[in-house]
Amino acid sequence: MQFIPSTWRLVARDGNGDGVADPSNIDDAALSAAHYLCADGRDLTTSEGWTGAIYAYNQSDTYIRQVRDQATTYAAKAGSREK
Image 1 (spheres, rainbow, N blue to C red):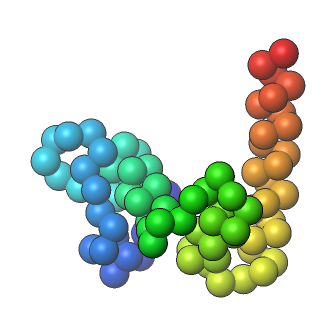
Image 2: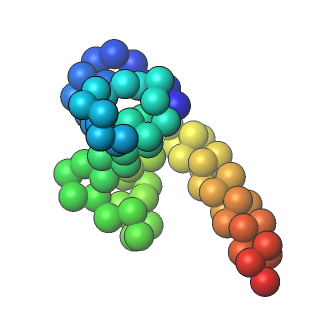
């Protein structure tokens, strides 16, 4: 995961409970990304919340479409494996 230093300073979380928020640690980075994406009460189960979260990360409509398309493809593949 990638965080610019100024963003990390705002959202850094200790996801593995070792007392250190480390952007190179997957547990810390994942929890911090979740905190960032869900900031301001965004509900990622709604279209508006999901789009707002991605837009907060990158203010590009092209990027939002790309992420949406990749997430849809991933979900379809994951769903087909569950059957």
